[in-house]
Image (cartoon, rainbow, N blue to C red; front, side, top):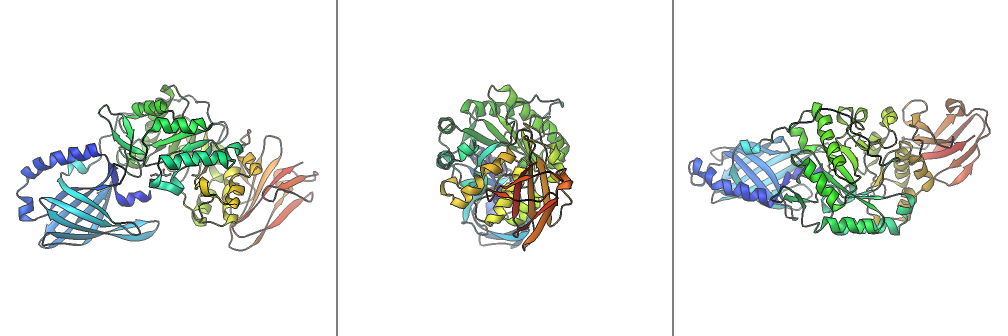
Length: 516
Ligand code: GLA
């Protein structure tokens, strides 16, 4: 959601429409540029560099040289401060709170011929310029909710009997994803051996979209010259390819969403050759109440089944409305259970260890999704990444790598491609993991596997080394002769008939597979 800081992206077509309406608006308002009073609504358009424009609205109120009001994007309205207008020069600041920190965005504009040429300084980002035009209040409001289908059971598409594995562009590349990045990811999945280890889907996340054409068909933007050719390329490597949209008019990064074009978009994805869709709530929140999450997601679930191509359906609505209780009913193969992950121990720990309570909602073809992997992105230690991977595998979470596959260290490879650990994730029986004891600063989790063995994670969430242990009686293994293997050290471990304990490094894990 980082791009929320920037406002939403719109197409050239919409800009032309907005500009075309400007003279009429100007006629209706008394000599705005002459009086030099900025009061009213403005639409601010800033080029994104891929053929789209970011759109936000300004609501300005000028009294003398002082300007107050707000900036609006994604239904959020943020007050402006330090507002002034003098000699045609406008200045104001907006404070946004992002990841619990306050950031000031500085706006500097010059009124010329009824338009404001605007420079915007975002914290830690290159300066952006754009143009603000007069608009109406009506233009700032979200579109109407669409009629929604009656609830019914969407038949299972039969896909992803084990959790999907692959790569997604967002965690590493965000808005910098393009055709070359996706091809390089496909090349690297094969060259690194990840494909042989089970990674299959190459998923394009947000910011691929361009405008709709005159028939309403979605197009890709300049970064993606030919989606069909790209899908063919990925398929030629023996892989599958995924795409991203959402039920609102705009995606989270402000690009064109599927609002009002659900069936048409599903058809387009199938024609291009896509095998996976991540469908992200975002701007739908401005249109539909949370009570409508289920029919809105069902609408796309139905649409995907109507096109004659198997397409994995990934719901992304951050766990709202207890999606794990109905995600499979609307045709979902996986559903996000939380807000966004990021590449920090704090966030991964917070998300990952919260999942045990809902682990039993997962079943073949329908998986809880605690978000994509951050392994290899550099913000955590190797121990922390091993904890991340171990936890996701015990949870039977989708394994979607989120790093740059073309430049992986040996250590990153050893984590992402640990086949003994992946085997837990992909275990056919999909028996839910459960906690042994309570969730605390140390955690013991166990999962029975198809062959009758047990995967056991001994986790240490503390900042210092701790001894973490399990009594075999807790999982019915007491008094048996046990064969145990450490899945990170790849070696046999000698265990007693009653219990096992190990010294686990700070934020680390010991992951065992134990057979009686
Ligand atoms: C949301 C999702 C992320 C990613 C971004 C893209 O934040 O939760 O996974 O898809 O949108 O804008």
